[in-house]
Length: 379
Image (spheres, rainbow, N blue to C red):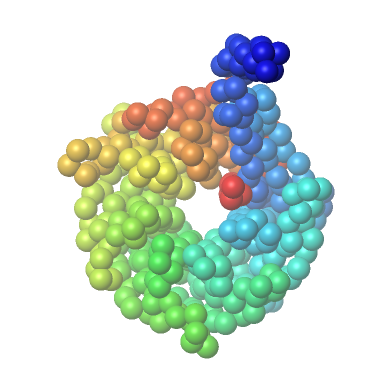
């Protein structure tokens, strides 16, 4: 018994003397995995996989699916088994929508289905919260299509809705241009931003109907703004909308299908002059910050912080770290922001301040041809 006690005491001392930093490092080591959409210039480009592990000083890109033309938007199912992408192109029947099986053990994509988007230049995919419906925005076609997603990843066309009309900018708004199709968190509404008509279209969603979408309202916005992307708060009661052509962030209350404008905030510093092209809007996981990218001559990411009153104020305009930040995304733990630059062909990493949401550019950068969308796989 005495010898056993001595051994036990020795083991206790041994483990208690283990370097705490080693334990912390092993616990904190985390790899963030993203699917990357791109514009392509050759057949050996397409959909990519990005892995980022700050503890291991790892930021790497791997090509998953070559010979996919302009897969400018990519999504994953909640179980990471299926990847959905589009080919932003035009043709007799429009662009294409694709579904793949994803195998992370050997980093491969296997094509399941490829169907027409029923409109030219598809540019956005929205997956319903239950994963049953996929909504596609066709920019040049000025319409949206809805597909049923089968359990095996096959896509069945259910509905295409054509928008009509125009707005005040003859160069950009000569006709309808659907730029995003976003389901609310409960999945019973789909909001569609149309840059060409300066409207948000609110659709009621019923997956059991032969045609799942029913128009509730066409909500007019300020002429010439050019609504692009939007995102919901977690409870679905607030909407954050980026206006591409005027570099404006608008914040709305959205309850009982009523839009109520709360704030209209500029992305621009007072002394700024030049071209703008506001692109992406993201809400931080704690919902205390809103982030918006701006292209043109700006190449910035604007950071907005929630105040005690519930309103948001801009606290930072920071260089995006490259040229043409069409898209960026936050890691789901809110620690990092990755920005994709279409024109400088790179992806850079920012650290996010957990207290106020401010960004700090790190030295992590990876080269890739024309990255335009980042989607983090689910843990």
